[in-house]
Image (cartoon, rainbow over all chains, first blue to last red; front, side):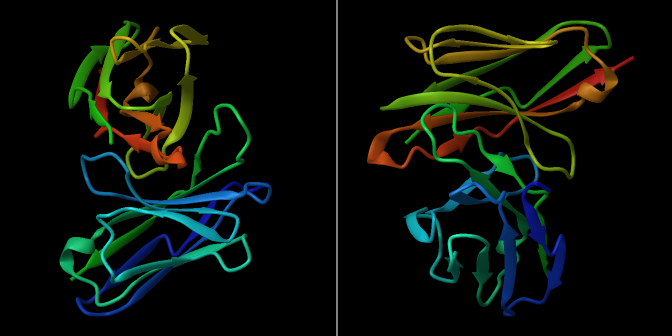
Length: 115
Length: 112
């Protein structure tokens, strides 16, 4: 298993453009999370999937953000009409939803720069 | 929701011991995690506490007191490679989602 994969690793875009990030979780993990992290801050929760169902979305998540996990495997996070404030590292994590620790395993992240 | 507080930055000497504290407020505590994050890399899991007491794993130990809303991460025999950000995350069962909320992280600088 190669762990959690994210693509692209870096994206530079102009304000107003749309961007899409992809996350491939660990294959046996049924839970998938998206977080956003800016410099000097901890990861901030965006949204959560259990299998293909999106069960939780942060109230901070603008309508410009949408996430999908169509077959309960990979997930995409799309940001429409990007703004400079969207510049951040977008982290995906997955976990196996068993009782106990349910530790999140993170991908390396997708760094977005909005000019 | 949670309110998680940890120091912004700490410095220590190679070979020494350092304790990184984390305090939190939550309505439905369901576990506390410590992650290590090197600059530009993904957070990696270090430890998990759900019951009071000390969990030891090699050079790293983590302590939890649920009544005090307090945890610490203890790093022994510090090495230069331990220079990183250490993230405290608390899982809350309120609402049934069990999603970890992260603190802002403590940047640890280890110098020779």
